[in-house]
Every structure is written in C-alpha cells, then in structure tokens.
Image (cartoon, rainbow over all chains, first blue to last red; front, side, top):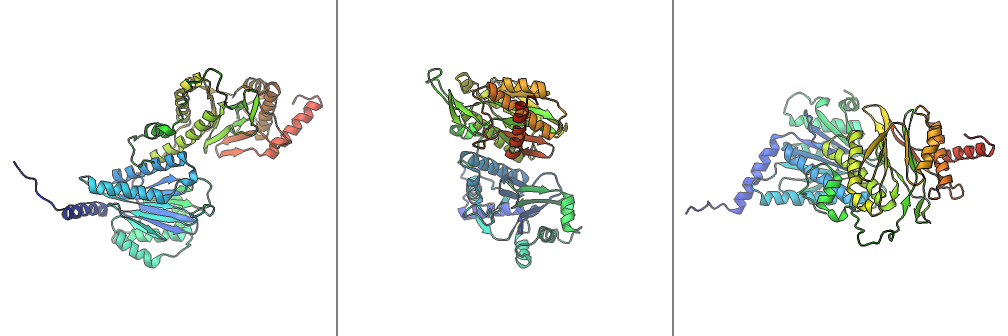
Length: 232
Length: 264
C-alpha cells in the first residue's frame, strides 16, 4: 500500500499562496480612487471583458487576476445585493456586509479547495449624506486568501499593487477633481507597465460612482469622455 | 442571505425562486372558499402611443369589494429608464410583480453587461404572469400593461397580457382593469399616434375621467384631497412624470368645456 506524501499545513498554505500570488501578478492592476464627486475606478484593459462592474445603487466592484474567477465573484456579489435589496430595502445593501461575504467565500476557497482563487477584488461604496452611518466612502480590498482590509482615499490591486500603493501614498490628495484623479490613476497604472509608453485612453476601463446621481450611481465612461477629462 | 448560489443564470425571478423560495410570491388559496378572500384591487390603467413615444397612466383608487381600500395607490411603475409597467388586478401581487420586474431588468443588465431588448422585457413579463396562473384562477389576477421606448426601432411600443401569459402588442392604445373598457371607448374617439405631449395629457385625462364616470371602481380626479392620476411619458430621453399641476389645469379645462357644452 502506498502512503501519500506528508505535507505540513504551513507548507501547503505557503504553496497555495505562492501559486495565487503568481497568478495575480501576471495580470494588470486596477486602481480605485476617491475624488471630489465620488469614487473613480480604473483598470488598464484593452479587451472588451470588463474588470469593473456595478453591484448596486452605491456599490461597485473591481477585480484582477483570472477573468473567469473574479467575474464569477462579481456575479455572486450582484446576486447577493439584488436579493438583499429585494428582501429588505435598497438602502440596506451595504459594502461592509458584501465585503465580509466575499472574504468568507474567498477564504473558504483558499483553505478548502485544491486550487486557490487567482483573483483579488475591491468593493467600493460611495457615501450618501442622508444615510446615517454611511455618509463616507468605503473601500474594501479582499485578497486571494480571504484577508480583508479597508482603505481610505485609494487602493490598488493586482500585479504591482505594493509598489503602486506606495506611489499613491505620496501622490494622493483628497477632493481632487475628476480629471486630476483620472490623471493620477493613469500615471499609477503607467508605472506598472515598466517603461512601456503611456497607457492610451482607449485602453483604460474607467467607471465612477458619482455621488450626485439619483438612484444608481454607477457610470461607465467611454474613451471620448476619458480623453476629454484627461485633456489629451 | 446566502452568498454562494446554485443558480447561475441572469434572471432575478428565477434566482429568487431557486435560492430564496420563501421570498418568491406564491399564493395558495386552495383553503379559501371562492369569494371569501377580499383583497384590494386596482382598476383602470391605460397606455397609448403619441408623437415622441408612449404615454402610460392610471387612476389612483384601489377597491375591496364595494369599499375604498386606498385612494392614492400607485399603479404605474417605471421598470427601468425606458420602460413602464401599469398594473391592474389584485393590488398585492400586482405591486410585487412590478417590483420584481424592475429588479429583473436591472439584474440582467448588471450580470450580462447589457440591457434586454424591449421585446425581451415584454416576454419575460409574460412568463411571470403565466407563473401566476394558479393564483389568478383563484381570484388573484394580475394583468398589467407594459410599454416602453424601443431604442433600436426608435419608437414607442405597448403590450397587453392575459392571465395565461398571452402577450399582445397593440399598435395604438390599450386600457385594462374594470374601467378599461370605458377608457378604451374614450381613446377610440380621441386617440391619434401623432399628437404632442400636451395633447397626450389631455387624451389620457379625458379617458380616465370617462372611465371614472362609468365605472364606480375607478377613481376620479380628487381636487379636494389633491389626488391626481399618475401619467408617465416614455421617450428616447427616458421617463418623465407629468406634474399634478399640469394634470389639474388640463382637468379644469375639460370640466369647463363640458360645462359649456363642448365635448373636448
């Protein structure tokens, strides 16, 4: 009778983490920035497959890594939010609970499945002055092992996230106008391309959660609008 | 609220039925004797084409047998930026269906990344009405009108339905509910597809006033309480509700003209 090789839990987790990290670092980054009018979500994405999506009235999603995996997570988020909004009220759908649900699901996949998810996601919620306790923006990052963190101002996920988060730490200012926030987001994404010439506006997937909009606050900006905001 | 779901499609009503069956409206009245259950019913709603798209409207009365259940119920609901549902029948299931329809369209758009065609929306609604057939057989009838602006054809379109989920596109106008017949009779005389917004408001108010005149379950315009019909325009630019002030002034003109012996 053959015995399976013994692998210590530490080793197994380390191997899984390395596997997931490698997978994620192969992809491009996504950046989320607060600006004066709400929250800006940007990804370098020449394809027509979206990395950014609408979850609910005030909540958006950004994912990096393996498309099929983070898109599945996005759909789970939409289903969760729509069911919750239907069962209770639209104002009861909050980013906090959604981020926790993601953390739980991604963490479970990391420990229980043979292959961890090669994806990490951001859940961003724009504040609403009339909702007590939710007046401010919220940005949550959920990593491949389910670890969750909340961020103020900005957050980058994907390949060069450590480097880009450090870069934004120095460059980010609160209450930037949309065009300036977009230029900052683009310059961060450009750093990740390592010397390749600038990211053209048509390769930027750009979405906003605009606080002043009624109801659904998520908007996808086309490349003409992006070019206009960037003044390019 | 479960996070992971077995259902993987893009329909919200199917998601709800599969994952959270207890939230899905199902009505079993087999224990009730026929006629025993009295629930509020909504009455007259109408939809017609005009120059810029479609107009959808409804009165505000809900009745429970011979009693007034509500004087200012809402029967016209936008389901997204370019479509409107107007409900007639048992108020509870009707309003729930309008709510689910709205989430349905939004859910599809978010999951798939694009909106359904107007035909697809009408078809989905027909399926939801068909699923309600057992309840309809027991008295909880839901027969809405659905109308919208078809961005692909650049035209307003409208549909009526029957309890079996039959879906019939109308070319000019339609009205349903207990006062629907009278509203249709009125529209038969006044309706033209090429009228402007202002004329469309007059047409709609006339039809609703006529329906309220003949049908006791249809609410008239209540200037004392300030309760006016809900009228929604649906055009390429989206949905716009007609203000109460405008309806009131149109209504006063109609009354004055009738008082002076003029029909219009």
